[in-house]
Every structure is written in structure tokens, then in C-alpha cells.
Length: 492
Image (cartoon, rainbow, N blue to C red; front, side):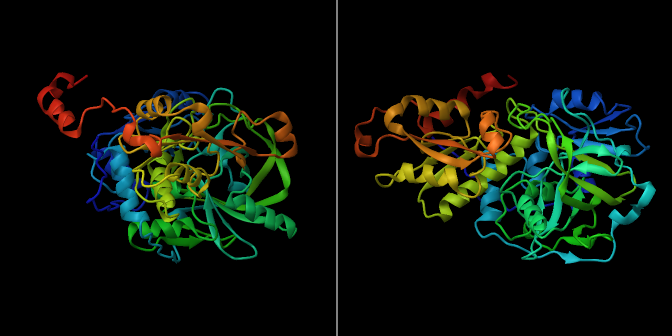
């Protein structure tokens, strides 16, 4: 099998903010505009219609009922050919080539460029304080029919600061609308925002927060990925762009956020204060997190551009969706780099499958070099930084399997394993509260752990030379078939 790598393509980000990205997506012919929709049902219905589709359009909702004229909502950034544009690569690359090109360009020798603080920016075009604060005027929808309310924070990240060590974090934490001046602030155990909040709690202080509700795509994506402890995600985005991100400081907390963001909520989270939050349709396809008292952000200032764009990236679950698509491309690159950095040789492909939210099922292909090589790759893949959270299954295969294809990955698991001999288990691994298999007792005592299965679907190393030959075509035969008879499948 000949699996192209995506090498020899230099990444170049061609936009600075969400508005410039929208212009480029429009030029690709991949944007649809909807006027007059309502937030309580229509936008959620549209999400159901397009977010699961690999090539669904980007949709911009304007003139939303009950919202000021010009206030917009954008959803479904990462689909079609625009996903390649978003990461700065040619549109003909497959998803695997895109992921590997991203890894080779940006992760092999990861460059970090520290942000710079400037005095002013478009985000300060409108400043709302006091009685003018009202988040309900933004087109935050009810995304799923059984959600507990409107969710303004799905395509969001929040900037916080470690009160002891001083480092900044930009993490993606969902936000439900509780009232004109209150939104939810939900962080899972172990995430950096949660660690910061617990430090403020221990010190008896409120935590300052700036919540960005319409950043450029890269900043949002990095808010939802596994950046190392102590490092600021927006400085990684600066490294991708090749120049420092320009940030301004909030007028209440002094925390920084992008000068060209669309909407920012600024205020404080009191670790001791809660409101009932949820339920919300989770990325696992269930309402697993339920409805519970959770912390909230009390807003002291809203900043927004004129005609602001609210970014919506809701999880749909029960199969691939936009959230899974962008995470698959970026997390697969990060996971492959983590495995290589741990010293595992001859790693070929890595794919964090969209089914499972790009968190629960990972395929790794290797060229076997020594006894135990496959088990080593699987163990490291299951617990390294990129994949430790909520990982359930890691399947390791030989390099004749295209692990981006779910059918090939499962085929290898079925025909190259013996269940009793081929599966190792890790217990007590880090789980997500969105996992519906967490028992009521576990939730009661705060035990957010589960087991992980590492499945060795490689030909047994000590007798691989006697293993039956696969009947897959050689690269030469596959190429000849495509060249001679590929036309039969055109348009199907």
C-alpha cells in the first residue's frame, strides 16, 4: 500500500481573524447565508442538517429573531476544502496528508512566538459595562432539543492566569447563558483552567476570566488541544503564523485577549458560587454530564466589534461532526509527534478517529523493528499528552493498513488478533465526565477514571515471515486499476 505523507508542502496562514477567514471561505464557494432564523429552534435544526457532513457548508445566520441587526452566528468552519485553507495548505491534500503536513511544518520543531500587548484594537469598538451588559442579545441558540438552555460558549476559549506561577492559559470551556450578566464556566478535572480555579479557591480569591466568543479559527482550535502545562496557547498560534499575536488587555482584569476578536466577556469566577448548569448534548452523543450546580462567570464588561460574529461549534455526537473533524487532523498530528518524541521508531500513520470524538479510538501503524515494538507504541499512544484524556481504545497495526480508514482498522483488528493474547488493559486512566459509562457511584465520589484497551493488531513479530500473505493489491496494481478503470466511479 502506498500512503502519501503530505510532505513537501509549506503551510502558510492567509488570514488574521474570523472575518478574513470568512472572506476566503466565501471565495471557495462554501458559505451559505441564512436570514431570519430563530435561536430557540432553527439554528439547532440547521446544525443537525449540516454538521455531520464531511463536505457540509459553512453557515452564517444573520437577522436572527430577537437579536440586534448585524449580530451574526457562524458555524461549521472545518469541512469541505476550507479545512485545508484554515490550516494553510493546498486544498487537494487528503485529511491524512493535511494532518501530516501540519505535523511536519509546525510540530516537528515547534516554534513559539510570544504575544505582544498593544493599546487598542477592533474588539474595543463597542464597550458595554454596568446596566448595558446583556449577553442575551447575542444569537446564542439552543443547540439540541433537550439542552437545558442557550449555549453562547461552544466555539469559545477562556483566558486565565495561574495565581502562583503567573502563566496564561487559553482553554475551551463551554458556557450556558444563565442571565444577562452570568454565563456558565465548566472545566473538567485536570484541565488547566480547572487547576487555575482550584488555586484561586485555595487562596480564597475570585478568578479573573476573559471569555473569547469569536476568535480566529486557529486560536479556538488551540484552546481545545493539549498544550503543555505552563505554556500559553496563543503563543503557539503565533508560532504557526510566524509572528506574534497582537493582544489587548481587559479593562477590568488586565488579562490579555486578541485585539481582533469578535466578542469577549470579562469578569470573575467565584469558585464557591454555582448555578445549575445543563444538561447539554455532549460529544459522546449522550447527556452524560447531567444537570448540576457548576461555577459561573459574572460579567463586568462586554467588548465586541461592530456587527459581531458569534462562533458556534456544538458537539453533535453519535458519529463524526465538526468538532471531531478538526480534532482528528490536529490531534493525530500531535499524537504521532508525541510517540516519535518518546523514542518509538518507524511510526507510519496515526489517526484519532472522528467516530468517538477523535478521543476514544486511535489507530497507529508501524513498521515493526523488534519484539514488543507494537506494544510499546500502543502503551505510549494511550497515555501521552495528546491522547490520555478519555482515550479508550488504541489499535496498533502493520504499515500495510491505512489506519485513517475505519474499515481497514477494524479489519486488521479482526483478522490479526487473538482476543485473549492481543489485548492489554490499563486501569485508572483519565476519563471525561461526558463518558456515559461512568457509574453513578463513580460520579458520586468523583472517580473520573476508566480502563483503556491496547490492541496489538500487528502480525506476530516472531513468526511474521510465516504469516499468510494479504490479498490487497500492490501499490503498482492499485495505481494501474485507478488509471485504467477509475473513470467507472467518477461522480458516484
